[in-house]
Image (cartoon, rainbow, N blue to C red; front, side, top):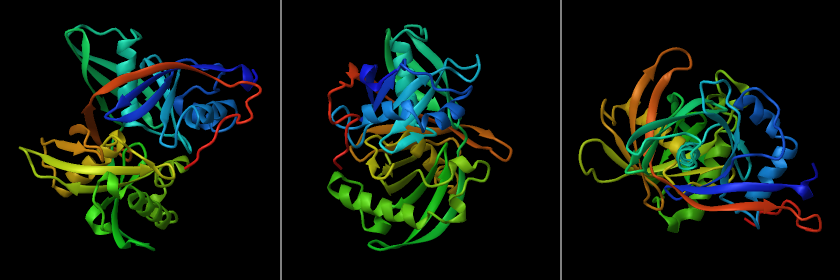
Length: 339
């Protein structure tokens, strides 16, 4: 099928302010039998062209995020998902999982009672995750997701940066590899006014870790590298547990508007390991725009790929529906990104 004939139906959501564009049916077939295989095949060919069409201006923007709904790996899941952003296809997306769970229930794809919880099981490239949708009086009240196991990879790695000095960085895995840095150590506050410097610091941290052995995944070469850099700062406690604010920068400068679902899971792994987050306590996690996730450990998994199963909860809402096309005479083609 020629690109000029594509008509792409989408359902746009936001989770705690972070956009997520859902494509329930593609006009092409992505080969593969698992979400992982389909992600690998999607990197080249028409699926990547559709990603660019939906991310790039004038149909998207530099911080756009979304996902393709694909078949599940096996009958144990409701469906699969391939996540994408400006730079390509990611292995995990917490806010996207929450949006997909909300969409699945709101659309009737997964039936839910008027009151109570319903699990939406989704296969993603890094494993199987569950979006738990809480209904109240026939409406979606909240959605949480149980992420793939998260664990600490390395602590206190020294990274030399050109503009922010020597930083001490912790690494944690939560379906992708995140670097965590105290914002104050880089002379930053987690605030929109510091956005440009925060992005610059994230670039320098990621570059400084590019060849570090800890940035190489111990099981899968295809998951090597730093996915996101998180700058975090404490907040005054309002009760049991911890309150923190953070901003996650990923995909060559995209900035998470939400507290980052998988990034929050990575933070919980680090805070639990250090003892800052006591067993049974939760993390209130705030974003650069002050939107909120709540997170807690719900299980522990043993073995070489074990870790903590973290539940991250928040709210996700529809913001629009659309049909995107590409005219054969459009000289801008798949679009552009100005920033």
